[in-house]
Amino acid sequence: MKTNQIKTHYRRNLPHIQPIGSAFFVTFRLHGSIPNVKLLHLKNEYEQALAALYRDSKSLTNQLIYDERKRQFAKYDALLDHSQSGPIFLQQPEIAKIVAHELHRFDGQLYDLVAYCIMSNHVHILIDTNLQVPEMFNFSSWESLDFEPLDKIMMRIKGASARYCNQQLGRAGKFWQRESYDHFVRDPIEFERIISYILDNPVKAGLVDSWDAFPFTYLRGHEL
Image (cartoon, rainbow, N blue to C red; front, side):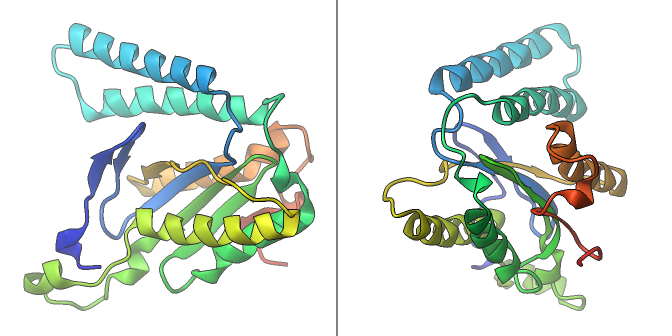
């Protein structure tokens, strides 16, 4: 896909800012893993918080918006970690292995796979798409550069894994929730913080005492 055809900013239910060549923290979840009423409550909460920021701040900065979005994501992730209903297919090792295989499939081709954690009903990943940008290229030809954007990458990962997981489970229908949460990483400090967040997920959930004891947590450079 040519860079001049890529939408780097768009909105569905969630805002998506996807600069070309960035690293991304992405969370995607099983279809039906959070009740719609709770999602609607979160959405209304976020919109009310933004409205208050616009009303009360003399100069609304990107940092204020970013901080509010972080707070809302923490609530969203907590809902996933403590869900008492909805599917938990990823708890089955054979299903988690399928998802892990699809994450690794495009590693080194469309992105560098830095870290991931496959929980019972959702997945956290950190990928860096900068490898698609040649080290040496002519800036005048930037718009004609071939690049696979994040939304297309996620379609590949989720599409194939949904098909194979459904086959393994002997079921049909939606497997993943269509929209993923994504956040582009702004600096090295945030990059390291996100790695820690991903690795600590099963520890905070009380599943293991250390991140490397969880079978479906991965950190680049720490492969067994």
